[in-house]
Image (cartoon, rainbow, N blue to C red; front, side, top):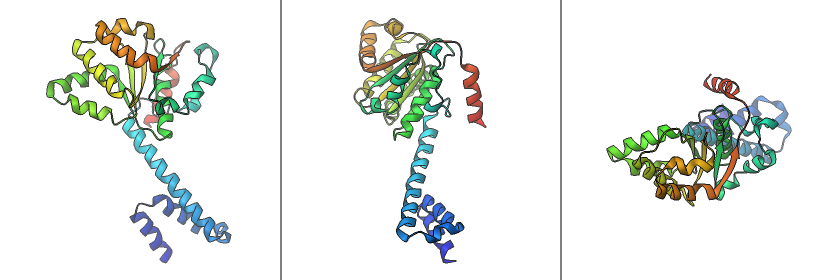
Length: 251
């Protein structure tokens, strides 16, 4: 009875990991021979692990990754894709986020740009960061709506709460003058404060022409390109593989 009350008290003060570990120890005779200090240490470790897992679960939910199951362990390094394994693995430390740098991923449709972006975002969350995924057309749409209803400053403030912003399918459709200005402001907000992952079918060398107006193009490119790790993907379509991963994540 006393043991059950202890478990209930641990749960009531949100020490869920400790409560679960205490129950596990009660159910397994092997723990009875351990010293009090050892069992207490195991309870503390379980609580730390539980809290970290809950943090990651919350961050993954908030990130809204299009491929939440994508992870760095599943990256396909086949030669035809043109990935430098050593270079890519150096990004897994997420030191580039600590340095407020960016990642630009380019390649033709279906080669796995979004998957790689989501895998890097997932890794960032594992390392204690938060992230938010946006398709570029949807971001532009949300900015236009926010401009009209006066909530653009609120949207920009919300985006700045995330250390990593993923802009997927960049450069799919022409930018209006308002969109050029709004994108510049969002990117300026992140300068020295946050990181970006941008994926695009257009090579980085053509982004300036895509943006159009030279003043905005110069400013945006200056804030992105000189602080960006550039990854160019090659090879055939990986869409069937990634669709399978997405179906599993939806189950």
